[in-house]
Image 1 (cartoon, rainbow, N blue to C red):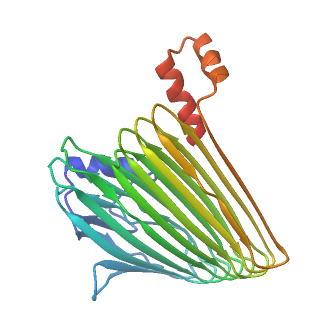
Image 2: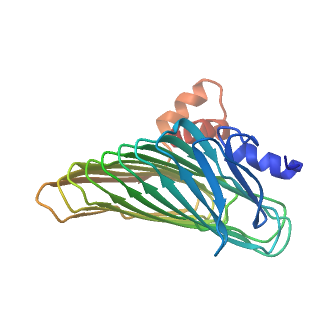
Length: 308
């Protein structure tokens, strides 16, 4: 069992909502290498031989298990690029908890690029959780650029739950999804930016199989001088249903650009998009003020409820 220092332990508490433990199926990546990992009867994790990263094999007999694969970068000036592939068998039911936290106390930029590919079989149910977080008193930037590729087989369900908590100076997220016959996708994206931070999220959802469906919900709060750009795109190539919803709260001198895009390439493709950007509701502020909350505390309550 590996010894985990206090900084790493604190970051793990923020990025692993289920609680990271060195038991079951897990892999902790620390400053560019695998610090520790474990397998179970139905889940096997193997290090790649040709490049940085791991292959995670989840058998169809997996029912209700979790896989924890957090990443911690605590070295200033480091660029960590990792390729993780997940192979999920027919009928598997599994939750995969990822996330990356950067602690940068230096003057050089620290960066993590995680490229994750999911190969999902038939009749499976997969939940993937990913949280991003940055901290440290250094002047170097904390940069996270995740790429997520998901191929969902017949009648399978994939839930993608992502959140950027705070402290990430720059992020560019790319998500690519291919849905087979009867496959279902649920996406919940939550984002908070502040100061001079920048966040871009590009998402391409291809509904290829008849009876496939997708629900994409993006909620964000932009504060300070931060800038956000959202570009979710749903492409209907068969009889399918999709709903794209982007809601943002804008504050201070921030900028938010939302570009929901729908592309129907089949006569029976039904796709809807919605987008809304606005400031905090004054009536909500006044109501909370009457309960004795000051403006700052009231804002915090409204933002927390909005994102959750």
